[in-house]
Picture 1 (cartoon, rainbow, N blue to C red):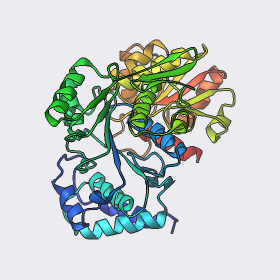
Picture 2 (picture 1 turned 30 degrees about the horizontal axis):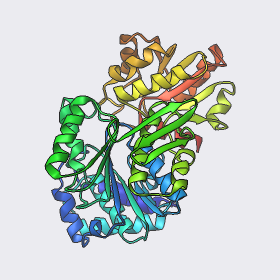
Picture 3 (picture 1 turned 30 degrees about the vertical axis):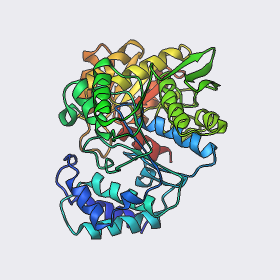
Length: 425
């Protein structure tokens, strides 16, 4: 039996408790939390983060900043990439197998066979672990939306954050930016300040209206704080003054804005000076323009400049295209696999202007993968030269034969990114 067999067995059982992957309501969560004696009421101060893009990166920078200031931090994120344990970080370290197995088993028994989704019951397990482990702060990342997300059970968080809102999950959240922003703004709480990242006007209007109804003070980009890159440095300014910092170690122009939201949060929490440097220098967030070096995949094509990213919506495509343009000029190839629930053409369209070719793959082991054939067709529809490949490895070998010094970005889905991270160990 493997070291993770205990948690794996319980997670498999949990998958069978509800026939749908997504079924948005808080009733099932409240019932289970009551059976567990309400662990959500015993958490260290909570920072609750919603948004379409940048939630994870912003959380990673806040965590790095808090830890640089000497604070211990719980963090919850989803989905995981290589193993479930990544979702639950207890006071600075990933949850252990024994601890994870215990809280999963306790939640499974307390639920007593009732209807509940996988995300809901595992979120309750995370809250149970957080409540029983001392820490200074709890960072909770919304799974989907906000208003009816399983994480939205904290009556009075210390702070909420809404990162940029864009089109994604329209089938669940609505078919306009305003509707989606309304769901994200569901994490706002009466009297609790909210840091708001850069927003489309329609989204900001919705967020501001809800904040006004709840008396929730906003700390909004462009109004209460500003951030930019100047001469290779990050410059942040708010009513407390100016910060001149290193650029974030998470690559990409979009990370400047995520860094701004993280700094706004740390400023609100009145963190000392080391927090701001730590947020820029120490954040780590895999599969977000992650530069792969010295891995088994690099060994297949030693001269290839290899990158990995899990972004999967049109805004992510725009951010990737912007970052690729900023890199030294080099032939650029994409190895892309996506889910059949995503706006594939919307994601690929901005990349058509910067990539020379796309190798389409199906995501191994993923029921909802778009076929390589359909991904290749979508790429051709937006103007990319594309063909199908059997696997990431075969695509990489083929690219290396034609252009051994190319830049290659493996992209399109966090599930594909997780597959790659498991490949490279």
